[in-house]
Length: 392
Image 1 (cartoon, rainbow, N blue to C red):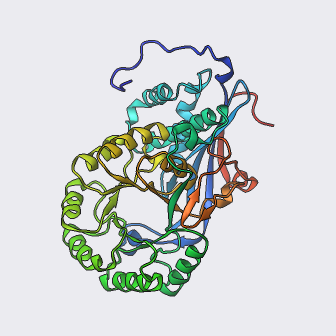
Image 2: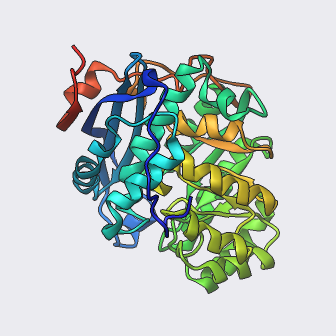
Image 3: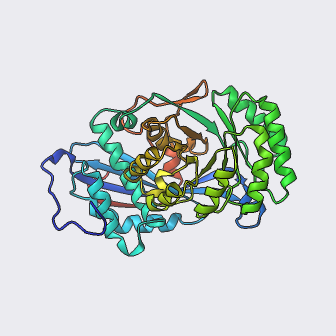
């Protein structure tokens, strides 16, 4: 269904058990143990990150099936996501939870004046992901199995141990611990205003890993085209798995030129907030590895559309952040993907994802396989409920 032509009639559910009866939105502020800095901080464009704001959607159908989904915002935008979700969430009441693509379109039209990207799609994402969680639970399947898994585990790499604020010796210790915990790759941040700092850190981590563990670097959009080409050529000696976000996220042509000039694969896409924006990367051949973020692009419904385009173009996949969601989506991608390991979200969920032999294992629990902790409830700063009765 095209967003350009709104539906004239809304199908009514004949499956009364799947009718959506209750929805709760929650804004949750997750504090980080230490302020986090990447290259955007060292170049003066942002302040250190101290918290992540999550938008959770919980919903229940008439047969008692409950689903959960989430979106998030770093540094700014959390209250805006919650406000927009609160405006449109009521559109789901009474609807058949099975009709996910139609409901995505309905929510997009409910907020059409704010567009189909950015904050608008991120608010919808939380609800869309909850609907997919419900669908998988009603089928008594892990989400990956519902989608059609190609594998039961996915290669994983760690990012949280290699931020620029972390002293080099600690980065090296973190890398050792990461490998010991069964995680298969190490990504460190680059993009420091002093290129010598970047090169020294990459050389030290590469030496510590001995070339036996995949190593990635992430410049967080802080290089210009000339610097990215220069640094990329120097870094080729380390046989990196990829260079991530070397240029501005929207510079499709620059990324394409860089990808053509370097042997090292180029990865990008995490900051884009729609399928249409990612299509610019695909059609320009801007990346070897595409890195969509389901909560940013509108949820699982939109991610699946993008994944089909990426696979058709022959791209590898390494979704950004939110491993609790992306593990399932990566497991269903035809080409061997990567998933990003972050332990930041662990206080929010009662369950843990298992890593072994460099891979993250798809859980056998139905749906996403996650439930909120009491600590997550304690960090909740705003809620809104629709329908009822609510949970006891």
